[in-house]
Image 1 (tube, one colour):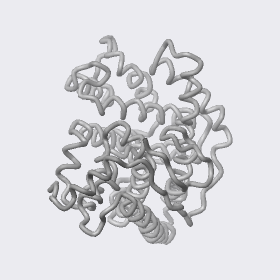
Image 2: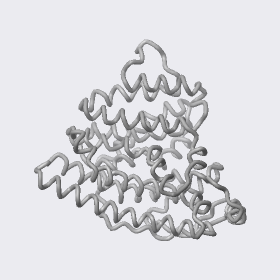
Image 3: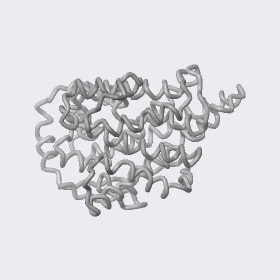
Length: 346
């Protein structure tokens, strides 16, 4: 990334940022009712995850984590299937959260990074000897992954493993080097899709519908364009809403709004960049709708009932991901409905 001299005043102002206005983020794609068992799912998923996070967690710490409503994310994305599959989805929501936090450290959970990733790969492929103990930071993986393997059709599990391997390989590189190597916003988005952790969620739709889509359905040009548009919408929403937490963690370059301030000569303030990001979110929604209509029309014309049912759930990722960001306390928003206003950042 070229840090041009003209951008130094803008970055100095950025570093002293105190607040910004988040415009309303509208979504014309209707959301759907959550899984009716989401409270039970959350309870069971939390009871599973909390001992892995901290065996001696206090009641106050548990309450703080419960307010994040992490299991609800998958209940809102995977609106189908049995209660049993919904509980697996809820546990996976915590699985992704824990894994993401671990892989952002040079020594995940105190384990050497190479050893951590090698053991993780072994658990994914079922080649890690069951008698060999895993590092404590990987115990949640060793517990959940075999359950997923037995619950998914072999082809679906293969899809999930491929997505997890791509994610882990990407996270093995520093996020800062990603930001430094991005020459355009578009190139950043293309690479950022791999650490958004959305793609590993999609096989759970197949699992919950009890289907196994062929590679030809999931690798068609139009489907991949739809998948990328959904992923971009999700990561743009995450970037702009998570910005205050990222800035407090001294990771502002993970935000697309920060990058645009550096890369786009027409943007001179952080507020302009936020406004541009929100406009991009609306553009991505239109892109999702376009490619959804194309893929759905082809699926209906070919009598592909399984793909039709899959697409109907997949599209809900867009409105429900947006809604989740405003009802979870993970990023300190938790305002329920409005989704816009003046935020105090520091």
